[in-house]
Image (cartoon, rainbow, N blue to C red; front, side):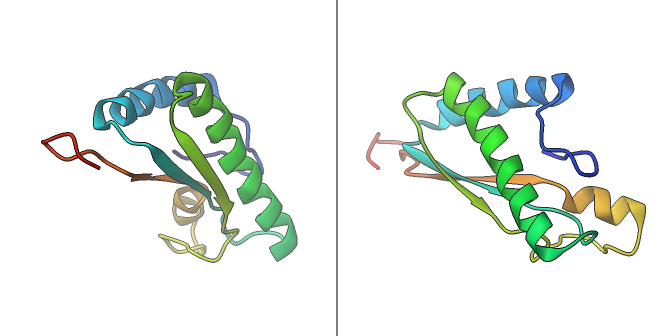
Length: 112
């Protein structure tokens, strides 16, 4: 899930994406997931750390409302784990994101 520059609020468009993500998480029958917020390389390290945490918390709030049975862990990584170059607008846009890692996925026999 991507965010606009200096923003952490979940938009209407992102809300629809979260509906789909919540459905996939529910179908996977997970017990927990980790939500990690990221930023681009602009601004101070401290500011970006806080912003990345706010992004992760905003996604966690939306997913928790949809999936109360799933336990979420929230982290912020600031600008420390870019997936693209921070030297271009396109790269910075890709770095302003939240990632979700599913844990405790049931196998085909229903065991965890």
